[in-house]
Image (cartoon, rainbow, N blue to C red; front, top):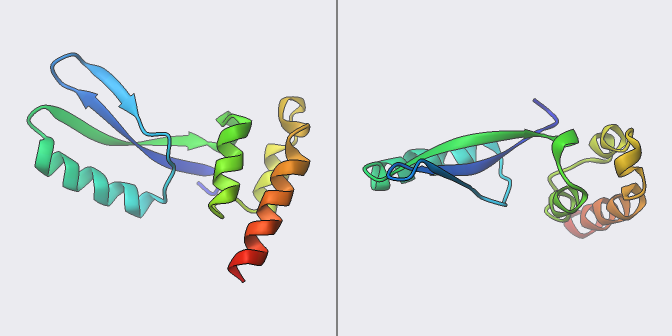
Length: 104
């Protein structure tokens, strides 16, 4: 689970359409949101947690995680093993390092 990220998703019951949040959060935060939203809007919507593996994310999503301090250099190394993402690794590494300095 260390390379898994979580976001809020919602199924609109009347149309069976699924909408997904673009923001990723820790599991505890999302679980709390799901419980609260289902209690408030459960008649018309069904909220649930959607998990996404790091290697399934697009480079801009990984950059957004880095900007929020939600990805480590170790995770970035695993992410960058594929050719599709290797070209983005340097810029994402810089973001991770900049955030680490800012929060220390």
